[in-house]
Image (cartoon, rainbow, N blue to C red; front, side):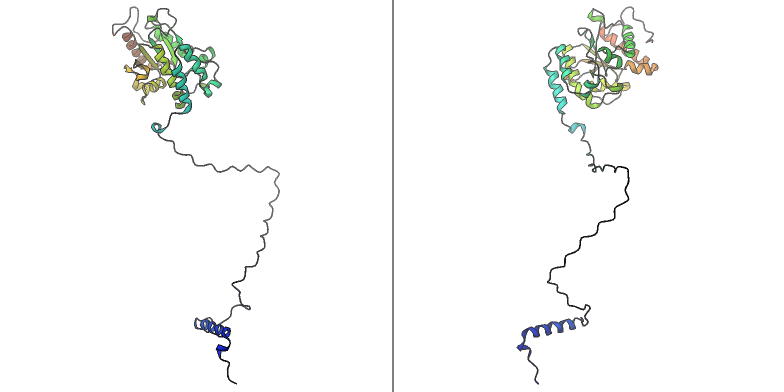
Length: 301
């Protein structure tokens, strides 16, 4: 019987050719019992069984907190825009044309200090004296009475100024002075004012100086001196010589000096404070000698 030619069954010829190719590649052994149809859809997979539940715990599960985003590094101060509260305080201060209007403008400045303080501490003394003293912030006694420098440090300051012939209650302008603070509200716990709080009220202080128009300014402590002079040095480096305030404050000659609260903690520094008082007295006298009756032993408690 003659073999059937491959051309009679083309599909069989193709299968034989594919089988011969597999044998030439070395695939001469079947590994599965049934042929694998690679064109068929894969069978559906069964859902995985849930893990066993942990034993019950009577304690409530702690709340899960979302991971916090990494804090962005702050921009340099020179690149930071003026904050909206500072813009508002600047506008309110600029619109005040009298001291009473400035006092009311301060009440309208939005700040948490206003909510924690008892009284607004604006100023004390005679604004026509020509001498303006600027401190840091009110303390507990100042907050209670609504007047600056009436506590223990204020009483020391009154004695210091009395030693060179000045009295805040004097009727004569040449013997009186006018006193205020950088902050008009007491910081909680008498803490040091923050940079943001100083920046918020600095336009108010500059406007305060412009309205009073003093001939001399004394800055009591590092907070007032650094804020008004825009300086980085501490008060021990700044004190001891007259400096000029910025143009928006009228360019008034200003003397940095030690805060009386610092003198209460460091009595040895009263020697430097007394030297500053002598400089102030001579400036008020036109660089002349000390006034009659002014003693030179120094500051006493």
